Image (cartoon, rainbow, N blue to C red):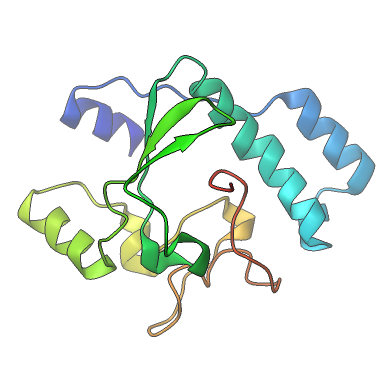
Length: 160
């Protein structure tokens, strides 16, 4: 899919991996599936595997364009279209914040945008493989994320 996107949109996507020593330390100290055992462990895993690599990717950026939508979770309902991310010292642009999922699907179709094949299989909010499951009709779009825990469904990328 990545090479298809690069060819289709004539871009070079940069990949940022987690620091192997952070992953090794986490797994050696807490176990391979420690993220299932507590919200704190899951958030630490997300921080290592997602937040730190994103922070590296955004190091010299002035603006971060997201795909956040207000309907995805309660803590996103009042997010503005443009906000200042004090921690990362950049603007965060949320152009889809007021869109619903149906509007996204219509846009994809009308503009012939390549859709992630997992969407058609019920993966509406995609995260790491062991932390994501497909949702069933009528479920909240984020229900497939961290389904085993009762918490605010965020990984730390979009906290304030």
